Image (cartoon, rainbow, N blue to C red; front, side):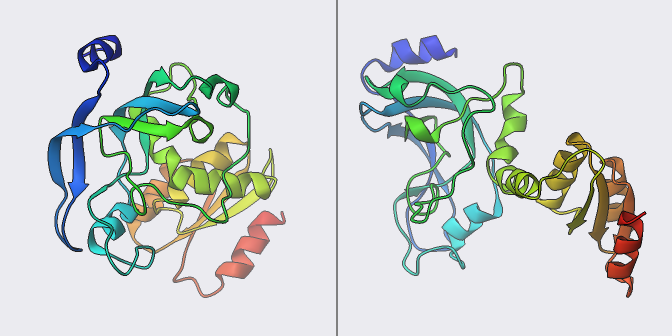
Length: 235
C-alpha cells in the first residue's frame, strides 16, 4: 500500500496495527489491528511508520527496569525508533518543521518524556508527533537502516561532536563491539579519525571491530591497556 492509498482509505480516521502492552510487567506485547491515531494538532505531524527499531529499552517497557516507573503504565504502545513518511501536517507545522539535513542540535531535555516508556511509541502504523521533534533523513538513505541511528546512534554521534573528533585524531572506544561502540567506531572513521577499539578477548569481537576499520584493538584482559592506548595515540 502506498502512502497516498493509505491516506485515501483512512479518510478522517487513521487506524492500523500496533504492538501494545496491556497488563503487568513481564507480559508480552500484543498486536492490536485497529489502533486509531490521535488528532493532528496545529503544530503536529502524522507519520505513517514504515520501520521501527527495537532496543533494550523496549524490554524495560515490557518487564520493568531502572528506567521504567515502579508501576507499569498500561496500556502502552512500545517503540522509540520510528522511520516513516509524513502524510498529514498540522495547520502551523510548517512554521517549526522547515528543516534540512545538518540543521539543529541534539536533543537535551531536562524533563524528557521517553516515547515507548512513559508515553506511546513507534510500534504502530500511524503516529502523531510534535513537528519540532521529527527529523528528515537524507534522500536515498535506506529507511530500515536509519532506525538504529535514532537511539544508540544519536548518543554516540553526540559524543563524537562534543569531543571535537576530526581528521587524524585518535579516538579510544570502550566496548567497541557493543551496540553503541560499533556505531561510535563507524562515526569516528567517517570523520577521518584513527580508532583504538577496546573490548573482550573473544575473537569474534576483535574481528567485528577490525571489519569496521578499527586501527588498533586491545582486549580488557591486557593489564597495561591504558599505557598501550596512550603509547599508540601519541605516536
